[in-house]
Image 1 (cartoon, rainbow, N blue to C red):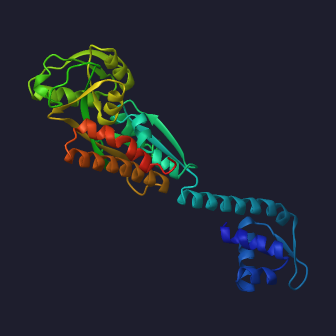
Image 2 (image 1 turned 180 degrees about the vertical axis):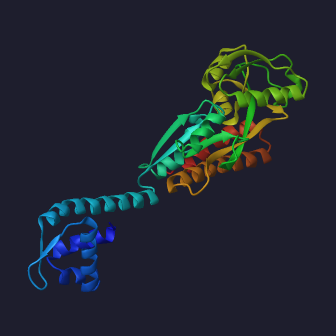
Image 3 (image 1 turned 90 degrees about the vertical axis):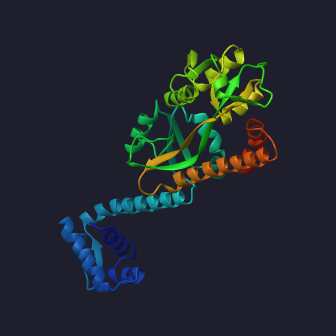
Length: 328
């Protein structure tokens, strides 16, 4: 059964005959008659009783088909409307996965401009235990987008790089800061560190960077998430490497934030299954990249004027998010 046959059947019913229905549909009457006969053969019943040369009356079977046919067309129209709204970003949803190194609160801060522009699109964000779990969920189709650091442990996904995550040393309030605002990694010595237990990839990156300069990491606390890390640091006696965005928040809460030399960093972005993304998912990626690119450009401009990385990031953060959020 074809949708065209259903449309023809209902047109004959509504216009009470082949002639007016054919005119309404802009088809020839013989073509319309043949389509109705083909539908009757396919269903194995007569839908109309021919009572005169050009008059048709619904049979009992035809009468039963009318509400079903209308429901089919209504469903098609509703589906087309839904797809149109999705194309126009007035409806639909995007499922997003994150991981400890690309936490959900970070992603939420990058998509505020999307939310302001497209308030009717639903965003479902969930956290995976690590990069392999995250990529597995994307491959399986449970997440349309997955925010992760590189490398990605599968070749079946496409990766869109959004930026480079820079990890800064966050120290307790009142800690002495180096005169230049920068601290060589090999000067860390036995500095006590706290880590996020789930952020294994990030922990490995920090440990490798320290060992590369001859420093053995002194890990004295493992916390369930970054917020717990920061709380412990603010309480005193322990330090942590945190991403630039969270380092800005830490400094505003009184922590001392130091840029190390060399800087510990790792590329990050979004993975998705190969093929076209939904319009909403494509727009999420676009808005995230726009927010981050704008922030990075503002940081570079301020650094060119002599500001440190943390000073530049702090100064640019609020202005960039206000500019990217048309709702204010």
